[in-house]
Amino acid sequence: MERRIWAITTITLSLILALAVFSPQLFAEADGAGKGEKTTEQYMRELQYTFYLLLQNYVDETDPKVLYEGAMKGMLDSLNDPYTVFVQDLFLQDLSDTTSGQFGGVGLYITTEVYDEENPRGRMNYVRVVSPIEGTPAYKAGIHAGDYIFEIDGESAEGFTSDQVSDLLRGKAGTVVNVTFLQEGGIKYNVDIKRAVIEIPTVKFDKIDEIGYVRIIEFTPYTADRFEEAVRSLLRDRCTSLIVDVRSNPGGLLDSVVDVADYFFKDGTIVSTRSRLESENEVFEATRGVLVPEEWPVAVLIDQGSASAAEILTGALKDRDRAVVLGETSFGKGSVQQFLRLGDNAIKMTTARYYTPSGVNIDKTGIEPDITVEPHKLSDEEFESYKTIVEEDRIGKFVQEQGNPTTRAINAFIAGLRSEGINLDEYYLKVLIQNEINRHLDNPPVYNLEYDDVLKKAVEELRK
Image (cartoon, rainbow, N blue to C red; front, side):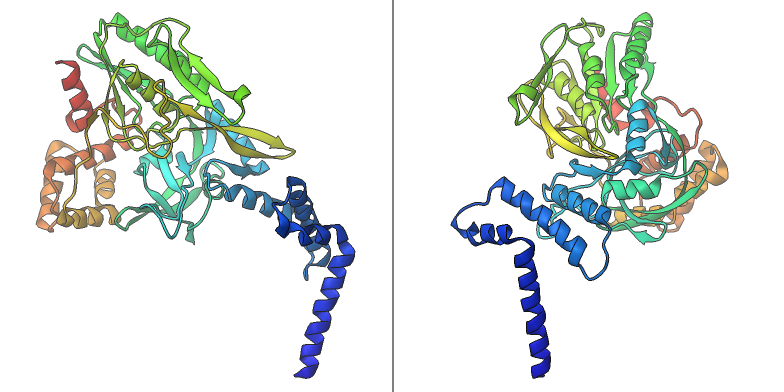
């Protein structure tokens, strides 16, 4: 026993002596650290010293790249900002493809939420779906905004960052990834998603009698041009009002949304950004002239999947009394990020926050609609029925078997569910079935007035 204590003491003294020889300056600074705050330079020297100490003295030979990437991720994670992240070379091409309007994968916009075990605020320690991209494999698989990514190919995704999840979801077009999703209330469902080259759509439009309807799916470099084409077409069709639908729109480029908003105003503020550096503060003003007639009443539709640039447009139209906003509270992303290159890697860093014309930043709170139209609220009994049909994929299997089911087939299917004890409102079941049908169509309808309560309310408001 005494021999063992002597051995431990000898090793400890040897380590202390080695450290003192390696960096006497560092220890001198540490001795005085209690007298006041360390300087930035002292922290930097300690980081550098630790890096070399591990490389030269850790029990196993260590790759400097591993230490570097771990230090970078740890530093950025300490900010508790899900949008400030270390981006490795693997993801840079993906990011470039996304902003240019095309990339490979399954078609999901995702985010890492700030999670605190002691104060989770209803959030789970999993990457959350902001929204699926319309027409993509994930959209057709029935993934919803707000779902959490629970497992990927059988591996738990708990604690993963959005970059880690993105890496696992992306792959060669035609290959399959198995994903388990988690909804609030503990509902889990598992799907095989075939990867594809994802082309991001931007704008779809139609009219509802005299009302123009424009759905903005994504703010890409092409969105303003597509929006202009849509409005000019609606003008030729003699529309007298407009619905702008940004539900499940995850955002996109700041310049793109500013250009779209500019079509509504002849002057005045659209959005402003504020940074720590006064020189980087910017106010974006309307300059190009009005395209949407000033006499047109406008309604904007939002939900929990409306984020970032979609919230900038909504905030500008709401704050300046140019539109009535309907639906659910939006996602709440009110920050601006920039990519700063570091050789083959980069830092995506929050550099500013944006503010609506009235000076409000909606980060983590979202935009409240003027008229709230919430989804159908389920009772406890209804929830258990809903959980059953989701986890067993009853509706998905029915639509897959039927193709495009007739009204008679749908009514028979609903009657069969009821005979099994599935207690869900008939209208709500028909909404779920219709949504599933639309996901399987090559050219789904631009809107569905029969089963869209938010859209129906908007039409009602514009016709008053």
